[in-house]
Image 1: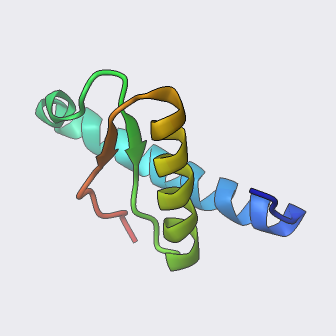
Image 2: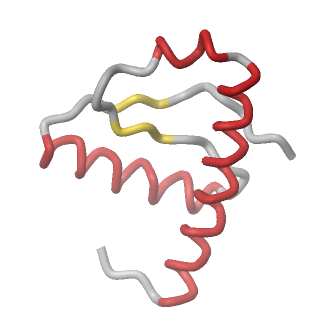
Length: 79
């Protein structure tokens, strides 16, 4: 997938924020970790629908290429 520099920055910023927010949630609720399959590619929802669509496409492609499970969390980002 070819992204412009601005698009890559948008993806990185949204995913970085979602990842840290999700990690904080997991630290507060460690029991949630067991629901994530080992080796899974985790897709986190962000507040940006375009980023969510890109994450779905990238995650699906990577899952197929790597033969790894895809896990879509129902975690909602802290807004």
